[in-house]
Image (cartoon, rainbow, N blue to C red; front, side, top):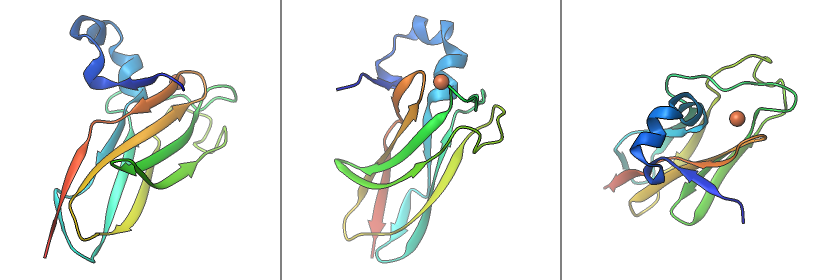
Length: 128
Ligand SMILES: [Fe+2]
């Protein structure tokens, strides 16, 4: 089982020292706080906030997954160079249909050099 890096588990002092490293590897789940049951909606996963991640032959973001609690909903896979061989905020848009019950979304991302990274949870309420 690989180590999973989570923002919440890293000490505050460590966060300051490794700010750019942590930021460029952290996936962010961006979507509405609430959706209507049965409606299609967009969930964007974006890597990093301030610092872009490299896209080199031996160092790139290879997988972005979207989870609802313990269920894998969707994933995107990238080859080296798919993001222009230059640093960027890799992002992918998933389009889902809102289920019957509220969701707790999170994203996992794989860096080919620095391992597996988990986003913060994003609660999505489902309304009638
Ligand atoms: Fe990396």
